[in-house]
Image (tube, one colour):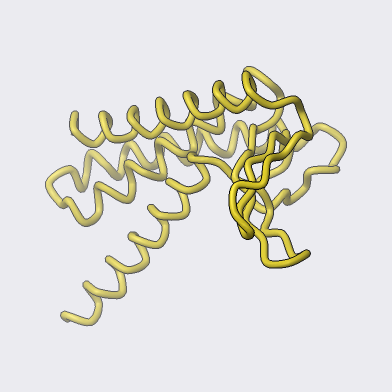
Length: 153
């Protein structure tokens, strides 16, 4: 169990370090084109993934905070149950670290710091961060693991 919690802690540390860096280098709303399809930006997202409920009036901060803490408690229970199964524990640890990285922002700042922005021409994917990336990767790995384990049965 310790190694999975260490992986979650690494995700949290990487997420928070990159957010501290972006807030120290950029002003809110500022962006820098890095490539023709990728920008660094500094935005606050009071909503959830893809800015869902970002304009909901403030209640969403507490809703997403409580939801993330409940999901995190469930993930810790799942990690205990599956600690010996690397294919299950790694994605759970990634999701846990990402969820808690964003929880820290909601507690500290009232919103999540997003700074990675990909685009094609004038179509922009919603900005995201390291925590969001870990959550997304963890979910994809969980789905892959479930599909792969079902195909072996």
